[in-house]
Amino acid sequence: MSMAGAAASMAPRWMMAQAAPATDRVAQMRAQAATVPIHTTKLYDNLYLLQGAGGNMAVQIGPDGKLLIDSSFAPAVPKIREALATLSNDPASTLINTHWHIDHTDGNEGMHAAGFTIYAHQMTRERLSTPQTMKLYDFSLPAAPPAAWPVLTFEDRMHLWHNGDSLDLAHFDPAHTDTDIYIHFHKANVLHVADIWFNGMFPFIDEGTGGNIDGMIKAGAKALALADSETKIIPGHGPLGNKAQLQQFHDMLAAVREKVAALKASGASEQEAIAKKPTAAFDAEYGKGMMNGDAFTGIVYRTV
View 1 (cartoon, rainbow, N blue to C red):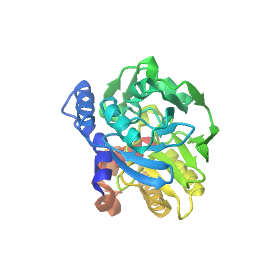
View 2 (cartoon, rainbow, N blue to C red):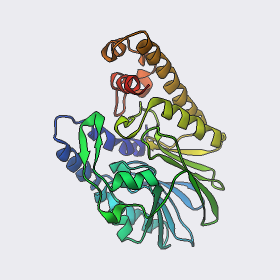
View 3 (cartoon, rainbow, N blue to C red):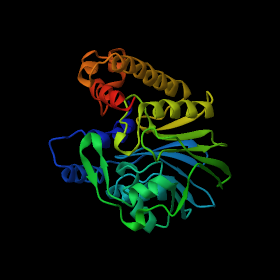
View 4 (cartoon, one colour):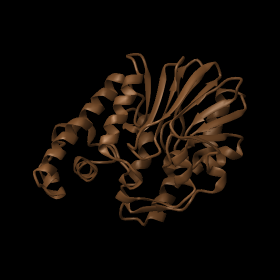
């Protein structure tokens, strides 16, 4: 994994620090975000990947104004604004949230204050406007301030024409959460799929807000159908990827799901299924991120 990819995946690793109270973990993540630099990678003439302490972001520049995908943690906002300013003098326009999680939306209030109008799926607004708990981590968050809430939402899909490109925004069925969307830049041939893909890692699936393994597999198939061999695919965490890498991740999910489902159907308990090591063939490649094979097996078992 590149240095930028490692930085992008660092925030979820902090969530594994179970020894600290939830409020302290939030403080740790935010404190880290204030120090992690923003790395910028050009994807197309006017489209860039931004990677820092939170989830992978993207920005499109041009006369219609800057269009930003996700906002990281609140303390990262000054660094994000500095990075955006180095790319162009275009005004702020649109901020799109890929889903509700704090490492993708905590900067919403600050970016709204900078002039961005927030778009998202309707469920993202509902999640941000009410207290939430991330079940796996016993991790509770209060409602975000109203200035952080999306003001334009959709249920299934919407279409934008922005800075010379045609963009599709569409909802995945519940997968990583029940709020996940993708953003497809047609002319640039760039697809941001957010946390339905953790590139090079077993994924965290937020079962407390609708996430499940079958939804992740279906979402991956939906994303693969949109891509070709030249498509640049932005994962929620990890390095920039392509269709072949997403296919490999999708096949891993399907293989683990099949093994765990068979164990569960045979009467194995969750701990018995974990003891069978159904992820063994994939641990070397995917087990070095925020989640090891045993933790991922537990999620699959509970959501299959």
